[in-house]
Image (cartoon, rainbow, N blue to C red; front, side, top):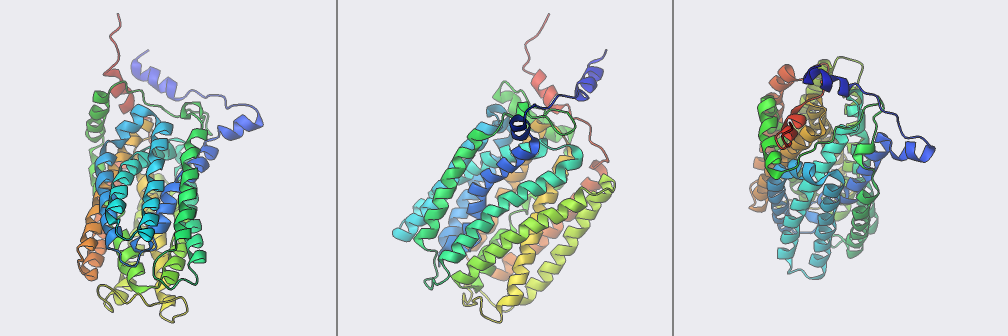
Length: 462
């Protein structure tokens, strides 16, 4: 029997699922995806709640913008190699290491509230968070895409995105409640303290997650765990992924712009126009809408149509939503310039139209992220390769975000940042279109890239 036949046979082996109600529940891929979602609920979700307030909840957004430059600059560097780090250390340990930075980052804003002269500490905490976030998201992406079968990927992404964004929803609700009568323009100490406690709880969750090697998917197959004994092999794997799937390069513009739009939405719209009470409610509605956006997109991406039809359908929905949202937003943007009035409250007649626009931007964000992950999952089922692709995704995403936040920190006109956001979103989809046409198939066979990489370090046998 040939090696190819042996691999094909291995790929079709059906494994028995754990018996007993507790083991069958605990080792279920669905349970593990929910737990993964709660890790990100407590970390990135609460980070999003703070960031979504505009200026990190501060009156002057400059410190927050510079801190986000630090976050995404270090994230971009670490993110490029984080897939390899994840494959070397294992997903649970990588996820564990990634949770620490979020508690420190939110704590730095509490310190800024108490001691206004510690802006440098907030920026340093942002740099540390970027390192941690690179690790967390590499582990998250590889697990989220490896747990489901091909037919379940859109659904599992939506489940994760729903639980994850509940962190932003709960965090924003806490902020709105504690700041309902706040007229100071900055978030109260009690809000930051509540977030610090929750992010500290999130540090413990990865300890309780199951070993991925013991997980059996719903179709009886196991997750493919990469075995890479050396760092040299890991870096070789980065090149191998690009060599075997060069069409991934066409997704890079889509990856690059996937966090670019946050700067205009959070700082140049929400922070620029609204009172702290309005910003808190906007943030709550923004992250709530993300849940519905990811679920809605999962219905398209996991529908009964052929996979290629679903891919083009998702692409079309994204393009339509981009133009509706940005044409609408343009008519608001021409009415104000930096630094913005910051005087629209929830009882203001001007609030209604603008808050519905912000909800639409929340929908667009989750639809964009869900589609990006789904396209990566459509390319491969191999956990090691997926970790590396997610590393590319998060690295380029962070590089784009760092550029956008820096543009805001040096006070580039709001309109310039808005137009760049619109143009980059459209360009990302246009570049992705030929990749969808040439690379997305109706069925993805198990990729052998990880096995090929692993063989490089295997000892010779007689």
